[in-house]
Length: 205
Length: 209
Image (cartoon, rainbow over all chains, first blue to last red; front, side, top):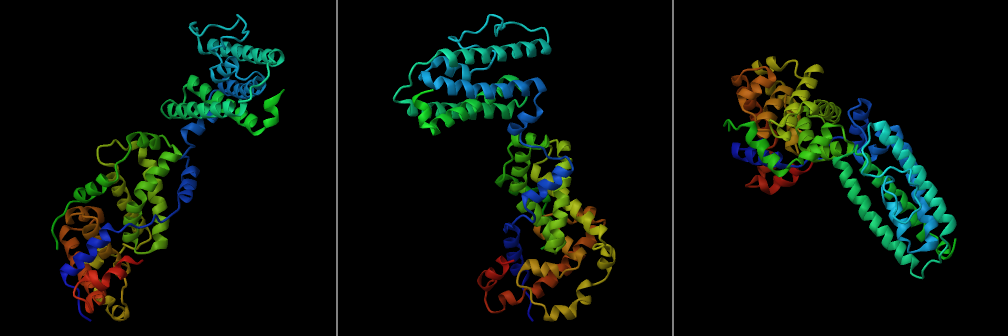
């Protein structure tokens, strides 16, 4: 048997050097090991749910519920800028047309502590809920014939808001204001989507 | 043949092809799964290739690769960005792989191999073995010779660097490389026996694994 020349071997080595090889393991295998060792955690946007403080989690849960209720109830009054604004706004910022109690602290107020701010937030959520119930009970204007297109436009707008807040959360995962906007937007989007999927509901309720 | 190419030059080329997003890196350091996955996806082809070539055995390499990546993830918080991430991770991969191989005693006789001509001990089996790729051929090298060959000719380490990694002298590294290349030239000779250039007949064989 003959031998390769040194140059011929170098040629083969050059080719080997640049050859791409598939990873030896799948990511899920690596991830499972890393998770066992506590080296890996869920991505930041998903982690917002788990790492938020209890009061924030509670507020977020209420927000999603209220967002859904408000959006759903306000379908009878499309287009209702008041309810839309309320759904997409942070809970500490009352909707301009909503009958919000004066007990809610203005957003410009200064808080003496985190607990103070959290208590204010709780009050705002309760007021928000009451305002939503009031709207649902008293605002019975008929929907427009363009309800579906309006809902679709709303979903598109909410998608953009959700994408923007998601990006913001990548940078500031623990920011409570961004988190609340994000969660409220998610809740509003789910509710709107449900309304689009239920044409009967567009006519009346 | 034995020119002293530096590790930095080769890895720098590799880095320039795969820029690391600094924000992604920060997220990975904090343990973010998506960021870690992106980091792995980007570097696994190169890192795993180093492990595989050093091991000479795909199954063993897969096990060691897991350890390598765990070590990279564990060490991420200590990564200061003084060197390119690929260079840093590559160094961990080489060290971890060589340590693992030592542990399973595949390199236990490395020093002895340098004194002995390992090519001679396998001469009989080599007569009937025809490598279809350089990877297969590398698998026929002794662990020590394979390590020196991979680190020098594939990864671009200098003999001094190899000596430090393997605990041998630069001269010992050169000796091992000479034997490794001689054996590879013989094992891969059939790739060019019937054609004037390697790129002809050999291309398909070398590309296949």
